Image 1 (tube, rainbow, N blue to C red):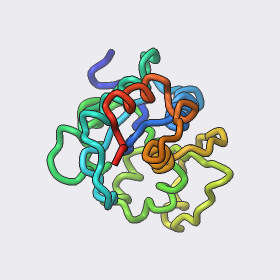
Image 2: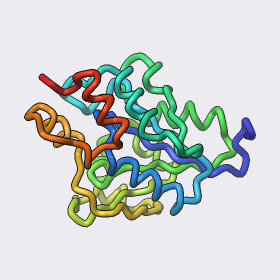
Image 3: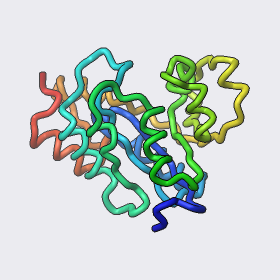
Length: 199
């Protein structure tokens, strides 16, 4: 693969992935196809600056993502935010990744809820100038979007209707309910083996 990234179409898919679930994987696969990506970088957040609750240890979240993306060579796990100290700002991540492969075309895959709050992100104006936004637009999750963000052209990725959230999965584990239909089987086994989300 070219170090410069010349001619490559690269996607960035960031999140806490606490845990990664089937809707994440479905969106990622659609992004590969719809955006004709050569690679989709999964970027588990180190210290999300907008997450008030404590996260599951980074090692566990990284391990679950690795399990979820097995078998798809175009899925690549990036440890860039896990290795960085301080708050995880997507702008810093994008700057670093683009410095490594400056000639690639970059897409940032985000959910509709993230899109609605995009104008609150650190350095969002610069970020919009660096990437093409790809929006996971679920019919059941309509949010108003800041007019300044709407004014910038972006790509849209359609996500199949899947009513799955990491919050609900954690709650199901706490209450002893099954999650096998919500997360990849390997992730469900990891959660059980390591007793995650029990308290």
